[in-house]
Image (cartoon, rainbow over all chains, first blue to last red):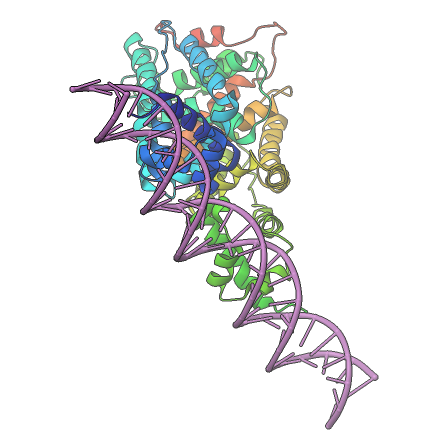
Length: 211
Length: 211
DNA sequence: CAGCGACGGTACGGTTGCGTCCCGACGTGT
DNA sequence: ACACGTCGGGACGCAACCGTACCGTCGCTG
């Protein structure tokens, strides 16, 4: 009969400690100190540092975000970017996520856990988003899911979690519009079976003056 | 008059240790052990673990990659992606780079050093690439450099360093084509001075079937 | 050839964290 | 009200690492 308040305190301390020093430097003693509990309280609940972090992180990352279906790819992307940017701006998440992703390259257990946890949130979110776009005819049925996910998630992740440059509020819909257009162009329904569709005609159509 | 062979051995050991355990767990003793030298040899050359890593990493990252000027944005991107993918596939770099980027969120000195070192390699590479595209008229002169860099670097970094999904050789030019399109769409030369250019007219032009 | 200065290696005390054990306190059930 | 079971807290031995001081050796210099 473990006291729930202490379990909660430990969970919070793990997240804060993880953000402060990262997984590599995380120590049980520091977690206990920050949580105001004893080490025994932690060892009674989790068998090791790895189990501790995995359980807490996966339960935190497991809460799947509700993704609205707006009926339009670009608007869907705007919503997704809004949610992503909110999540990645959270001070704890902004430090924990890149840290664990880097650690995942080293520790297969972490990689597996993150993949399982994020598959619910991102891959399937991306998959659903793209799947709906395909159903609506915005994207072709042969759309490369991996490539599409890279295009959607990559730029925002890079900006918020890696380069960490400020991102103004109006940049978000702009990015969504660009990505949506790129997706539509790259994965457009095959109206013609020309091998190299590219966009030269589009550029012309867009830029009547000529480059 | 420090012996160069020992310095070289230390540098190599730091890189390997960094890849193996990350910056957080990196210990001077482990570096000395791996290099086959004594701790004194390290402390004589660098004052602390931070200085050690910063100097070695920045000197390793400082070698700027030659970026060919192919005269075409898409081909330039293909080249850049080829270089980036080669670099990010390198086992040491693939583990060290995400680790240090995560650590940079925590340590301002690391962030500053990485920014300085990578500004040479990436920002300016990206800047040059985009600048040339602007000169050629492929992109508008008011192109948002930050957004463009995000679009260029983000997807490939996500794929290779985060999701770590396999990327076949033919995916690279495909990705380059999509990104080039996205850039052309996002940063097209301003033909009209409408406030909200976005792309709705373009979407129509692109998708004659109708969404 | 001799002396000096700088080098690398070993040894040391101090600190931190790990994982475990024991003890006092609290709540529960009868 | 009492005894039992379980919990949290503090303490312990062990190991790793830090940063430094000392020591023998090598190479340069005069």
